[in-house]
Each structure stands twice: as C-alpha cells, then as structure tokens.
Image (cartoon, protein in one colour):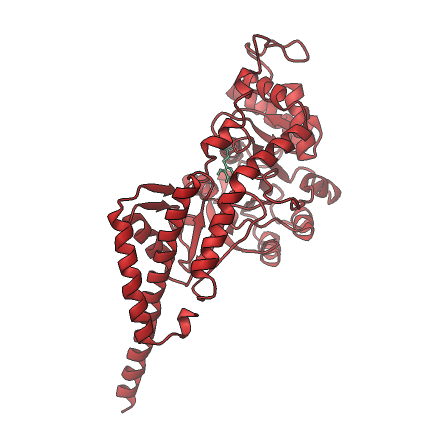
Length: 439
Ligand SMILES: Cc1ncc(COP(=O)(O)O)c(C=O)c1O
C-alpha cells in the first residue's frame, strides 16, 4: 500500500487511526532513549575479566612498571597488538588514552596552531575548509564548527563519498586541508568504502601540500555477519601513491571493551608518528599504561579480540534484526522511507520523505522516545532535505527497543501522511491560483 498513491479519504482515515495509536503511546509515558550509540550493559559485561587481569603484577614485557610515568607512545605490547589489527607496523602507531575523538580533536588543534609537517604553515593562517561526507558523525562536525573550520558537505554513496566531486574540489582549492572519513560500517549509513574509493583518496592530487585524511576506523572489527566487509589498507595505498604522510588512522576499544575506559590509537607514517609522539610528550608524561597492560593481558592476541567481537555481535545482532523486521513490517512498500541494512557497526540510517525528519523526531520525543536530533548527521546540523534519521539500536533492551520502534514507525507514517496531504493541497492551491491569474 504505497501512501503516495492513496486518495485523500483513505489517507485521512489512516491518519485518524494512527493518531489514536500515537495517543495510546503517549499515555504510557515512555522514557526511552535511542539517541547515542552506546554499548548495552551485557556488552560491557563481556569485558569483566579485564579489570581483574593485573593481579598485583604491573610489569610490562620490557620491565616497565606500568604504575609509573613514561612511555608516551604506549606499551610496546599494546602497540604490537593494535598494529597487527590495523595492519600497520608497531612504530607506525601510538596507543594512548581512552578516546579516539580526543586524539582527533588534539591533532586538529595542533594542525591549526603548528601545521602538520616541517615547512608548512599553521593551518589557521588562512580560513581552513574540510570536506565532510554526509550524512556523517556529528562529533566530527562539532570539532570543525568549534574551530571555525568551514565544512563542505559531500554526498555519501553506497561505496563511499562522491570521489568525482572530492577530486575536483581538492585539486583547485588550497584551503581544503582535510576530509573526515568513517571508512568501515560508516556512522550512520553503515557502508564500507570500496577499494577504488580508498585508492582514489590515497592518490588524488591536492592543491594543498598539507592535506590530510582523518580516517576514523571506529568500527574496524564490528562485524555483525559471518561475511565481514573488507577495507583496503589506506596507509599502504598512500605509500604506494607517494603520499605516505597523507593519512591519520584512528580507532579505539570504546565499543570493544569499555566506552569511556578503553584504549584509543592513532596510526600513520613513521614520520608523522614520531612528530606526534614528540608533540604529545609536551602534553603528557605518559598514558594510562595499567589499562594498556590490562587490555593486552585480557586479549593476549588479535585472534582473541576478534572472537570477543563475535560475542559482541551475538548480543546486538538480534537488536538490529528486530529493527529491520519492524521497519519492513510497518514501513515496507509504503513509499515513505528507505533505510540501510548494515553488515556491521552501530547504526541504521533511515531516510523519510523530504521535509519530515525533524517532525518525526519531535513527535517521537513528545511521546517519550528520544532519537538523535534530525540534522545532526550533517554539517552545522543542517540536513538540506530534512530526511535523515539515525537509529542507534544497541543500548535499549529488546522489549524497550520494540516499543520505541513501534512508536517511531507510527510517527513516520503520521508525519508522512500529513506531508503528502499538505503537498497535494499546495499543488491544488497553486493550480487554482494560476487558473485565476489566467482567467
Ligand atoms: C565514528 C566514530 N568515531 C569516534 C567515536 C568515539 O570514539 P571514542 O570513544 O574512541 O572517542 C564514535 C562514537 O560513537 C564514532 O561513532
């Protein structure tokens, strides 16, 4: 039953029915939150052995007492473990505190103040611009907005951002200094960049000599199926293209062990990592090495971390499936929404009819279900079509998720019907206005 082709009376009857259902939900006084991609308590419980792992033995493999100062670039065994996982060399990675977002923020702040390499000026000498594949991650955009970096939205496709547009822009504009990328199970669309997209990003000619790719591989190991997406190694691609220093790769264990008490890392060319290590040694005498030691002892090797991620997937896969099933059942074939079916990551991205997302989110909130703000997935919070909504299914228990989704699908239907009726009325009004002018 495609709502776009239904006659006015049928739509009005449906609207009345849906309003009743909506009011029933309102009476329940729900208090559900699906705004942020947080691990649920059961996911966190999977790492409960981590904090018991030290057992009074605080010595790293090189004899370092992890309770003491030092080791800015991270424990050698932690660097080795995550270097293997990110397919770089141990001297091409820094394992640091708990937040990759903090590493990204600090890197941009330093780039603005100091530039990114010897012989290039601080970015802030000129009005800097960043390319922002959209929809994307609101906190990336928040960093740019905070530092007055002008954001240029770039459309996201099924295989990554629009490279034709990116190549054109970076080739001519020296003020474009960087691009945000979430290359695997992207936030929020869930897509993984194709090999071609990775190669083109690595090899494109940029007017700015000091152009950098911020490669936020937050969901590198977060597969939900037995056939994980494969992501081409961008550091290798950059080296092969003769731009070895072009990329900074970020990741963390925020959604592997503990969000807020995991490990974060940045990988890049050895030259970039050496420079960063020096700069970071001004900022800190060393990271929390006890947490690094606990993580290394907990996982022991990359294989075990992957097994751990299979346990994570077993917990959250039913939640994703529930969302897919409810969306299919309630919105499928109605012509009013499309949504992603990611094979990993943390989000489902839904597009309403143009002009409906904000109102859907508002209605859901009014009935007690908080979603990510509509528009948040675009630079400056401005979704040009007002149609993208990010669904974060991991945190609520299944029963709550079901209620939240049922309400959500009612809101999508209601708002869409109102919009269809309103658009038709506008069309008719315009028609009669024109007739009157002619007549
Ligand atoms: C794409 C992306 N990058 C970074 C983060 C935050 O990472 P961290 O906890 O390491 O700061 C998130 C959290 O949702 C994310 O989705």
